[in-house]
Image (cartoon, rainbow, N blue to C red):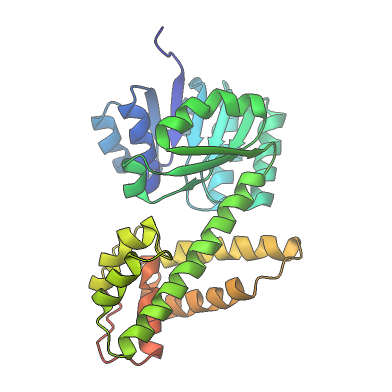
Length: 301
């Protein structure tokens, strides 16, 4: 028997479009909305219906949300014209954004008061990773709601993990992004050291890729570092937002984060020198400057 579940999608930026496209490719019925309507056109060409208003998505059974910031989540869910303002509301809202535990709890409470289940399901992976089916999702919320949405999460990602009944997935994703930022800073530091000692950057990274300290991420992104290609997959500004949230969680839980705190300041410095909208791998440019490498370090790629 064919699946008759109607899915909605709010937020069709780079990540949201890639995730919604996987649902469409799996044969699901998907209605999409985005503040800038033009960003929905590629999905419409793949078979999505485009909603004129967010409240139109209340006709869907499950609605996914993928937006950039906590304020955006509140606006599209609990705002005056958000999902909960619809006369008919979805049964489940699945928020895939990266936001704080506090923001998530506020939205969850509002959804529960309106009789709507809320699943937090942040995702690890950039749009290319999502498109290839290699993303990872960590989810938390009512177990019954999670079971209902898991088949669709499985269509989006290769790994889907249930972390608990409340906001656990938010902290897991923030821990992931803190680690990612620390890892990148460590990578650009050792790369610049090898370069300063006379080793070609490409040669050093080729060696590193073959060692036990490498990873799929390092192997996939090393060419970008060699070529200093900072085309954004995840911007330095978005990384700073996640460090703000992650270090805030660490403060509230009384967990010391000496490495993370130091990396935060380096991210801030990179933004201050013009790398705000560049890929966060551009932390290399800041490192190259302070290491006084002979090679030019353009910040405008």
